[in-house]
Structure formats: C-alpha cells, structure tokens
Image 1 (tube, helix red, strand yellow):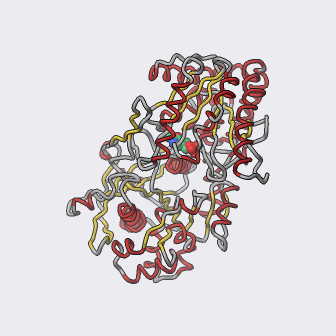
Image 2: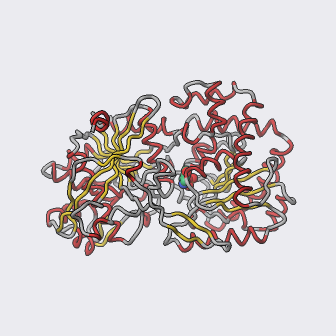
Image 3: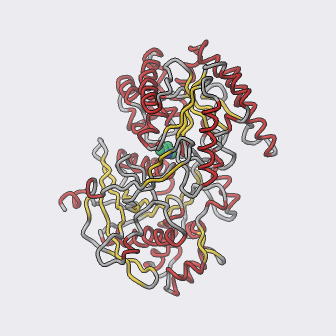
Length: 558
Ligand SMILES: *Cc1c(COP(=O)(O)O)cnc(C)c1O
C-alpha cells in the first residue's frame, strides 16, 4: 500500500483506452491505437500531467502470430502474469451484466518517467472469486470473442472504470475516451449527475480514430437489453446512442464537449461523417525517446541535450555532422540486418537500399501494392538494388488480411534469386523499434482515406529513415516533396476516380523508385543526407507525443 498511496494522488484526468501498448512483456495491444495510448501515457508521465489511465487486463493477450511456410497465420495464446508487473489493489467494485453483479478489481501499474513524473494505470480484471466462470473470462482477451463478449468488456471498461476510480478516491475532472469503446462511462456519469447532460459533457473528451462509418462499434438493442437490464439506462442509451442500434461513437459524441480527430484530414472526414458536431483536430505523435534507436539517442544526447523531454530541439539537427548521423544509421541498420539474417537465413547485406513495410495486415493497408507489376518491380530492382522487409499481423477473423500475408509469401517465392524479401513473424513493439530505425526507406501504401493517422512513419523519421507514402493521414501534414520524403499518388485535393488514383499510385511507386530514390541512394549521398536531416528536423521535431500531449492539455483538459 505504501507504493499505492505514494502514487495515487491528485490525478484528475482519466484516460480510458481498450488497449495500451506499454512493452512486449505486457501484450495488451493490437496495433496503432494501443501504441498511441502507450505513447500518450509515457509523454504524460514525462510532462507530469496529472493523468490516470484505465484499461482491461487482458492477461491472455491479443495473440502471438505463427506463420507456416505458405504464409498461413496461426494464433497462439499469449498469456502473461499481471502479478509480475503490477499490484492488485484492495477495492472491489461491481457492474451489472444480465441482471447479475459482476465483481471487478484493478491491478496498478506505474508508468514512471526519469523526470520523476508517473502515470498510474488501472488494469481492470473480472477474474475475481465469486464471479461465474464465464464472467471471470470477460477480461481475458483483447478483441477476442463476439459482439456479446465485446459489449461485456465495454461495460466493465466504461462503467467499471468510473466506479473503480471513485472507489480509489480519485476526484476526476475530465474523462478522456480514446476511441468509443469506453463511452458507457458517460452513461455512468449521467446517473451520478442526476442526469444533467451539460455537466457530463463538460467533463468528457472524445477522440475518434476511425474514418469510416463501418468502423464504429455498434450493438443491436436486442443484445444491449439482454446485458443492460436497467430500464432507465436503456432509455438514456436510446436517447444518446442512436434509435436503431447502440452506436458507441454517437454516445460519446453526444456526451462530450471536446471531440477531436487524430490528424487534420481525419477531422475533416469525421466532420462529414458526423454533421452537427464540432470536430477539432489534434494530430498524433509518437514518444520520441521510446522510438529512437540507442544509436540516435546517444547522438542526440551529445548534440541536443534535453531533446527527449523537448523534442522541438531536433529542429537543430543541422548541427550534427553528417558522418555521425550516417554512422548511427549504419549501426541501426546493421542490428536489423543481422537479426533478419539470423531469423531467416536470407543473407541480406548492409549496403543495399532496404525498404520496410510493417503494420496491421488488412485490406486497406494494401501491403501487396508494390507487387502490382512484377516486371516494373524487376526493372527497378535491377538484380538486387533493393531488399524488402515485411511484418504484420492480421486480426484472427480478418480472412482477407490473412490472405494478404499468403500472397506476400508467394511473391517472395516468385522473386527468389532476384530480390531479397522477408516477412518477419510476430510484429510487436520490439520488432517495430528495430524496423523503423534499421531500414533506409519506410513505405506506406494505404487506400485513401482509410488511414486516419498512421504513426510508424513518425517513428521512422526519428531515426533518419525516409518516408515514401500515399498522401493520407499524418503524411499530408509532414510531406514536402523531395524535402521530407516522397508522395505516392495524387495530392489530397486532386479529384480522381478510384481507378485513376490507383494507376497514379502504381506509377509513382515505380517511377519515383526508379528515377529518384534508388539513384539518389547510391549515387548522390549528399542529397540523401539532406532527406535524413529533414526527416529529423522537420518531421520528428513536430510529430511527437510531447507536442500532442501539450495540445490535449491546453485545448481539451484545461
Ligand atoms: C507503431 C506501431 C503500429 C502502428 O503503425 P501504423 O503505421 O499506424 O500502422 C502498429 N503496431 C506496432 C507494433 C507499432 O509499433
């Protein structure tokens, strides 16, 4: 308890997220949303923002990816032991599911910063004595199970979270919903406020992350009525969460005064998706220290002391000699290539232009776009001028995403002997850190406008890795052609049909590689150094979660 009383003091902003990416050892994240939550928390701790975070313990994890030789993905349980990292807190609260009380407890994890700041994180857990076997499993898996399982989890997260914060004596001023999964917290707050909507709205902040209507969590009222049996609650949900189905984003929109998208572009799209609501924008960032390789950390420490807690200092990267930057990059590249060769035996080398593509494997991310025309790819490659590293997991129920992994495996086979291409198994935070620092070029080819933000390219920039990407999400704000990297496809305001857009993207992809990127990499290193410098000084200095956190504080929390 000493530890607990020392830490749980005065936090008055509650940050709710279904997933949080803290480290490989605590696998309670699936992808970008969770990593962003982790970076948000790390920056809040560094900046001593009085934040407390709430999530589910998911101690059977998301899953561990195992790939067959054909590229077929299998999922293994990724169980971990909360007690190895966290302290079980004494209070027990309960939530009502199907007319029955389900007990909830919380594990405390302290995210500590070297600055002396600390963000406590509450990992809610229903594996409590007295709960039925089924209820004990509610907090087992991240994004596992069906709609019923998901809604139960959201009841525990939103309602259980508010009750746990109260049981721990927090006096919360602001509740920040990172995506709509936690919006039942607003229902709970309404009850506490004697149904005064203005008071609830004053204390709620909603960040949306999904630029398509279908991506927002929705539940049939048949299911909702089965799990939430209180008649008053149901009336409130129908009033604020939609007439025909319970839309968690709508519930959050109706009960928050501050609503934001995660890039300027995404905010505009969300504004069209939800007319009548004022949708602001706070562009995402990544935690600079976490995503900078040890080699660059050492360099920045020497030339730009204080950079980790003030990433704006990276704007002064021009004062670091090119050869030292190149040496840091070479070290990171060597570490990656050594690992790739150890894992796959493919025999990559340190000299060849190395391209990275790692992210969730799902249709809109289009990981196979670079294989659209193998003849053109062969021409660009010219017997070994490029090597490619892929990684990424498909959600267990995303059959199309799994198919994409198999497709990449077939291309790897087909190009064997001409081009070294690997697909690394089980993409996670540690591998991400190695990849975004160890390649030369970071490729991103999402289908517009589905990439709300994207963050891996920001991590790459922190390590002087150059971005080559479709103009969607954050890249619209980071891109200056030929200065900070290169665009693939039309500019944001160009009106193209889907076919024209795709043709333009494929043309750019091959043409820019062939005429600009490959020759510059091999023959005009001084120009390449400029792009490295600009990635750090014009991208990383801005696209970091310290800047993002300060925006949340001044625009939303205060
Ligand atoms: C950064 C990161 C992501 C998100 O990357 P995007 O570019 O936004 O797709 C996903 N998974 C892991 C492990 C990451 O580190």
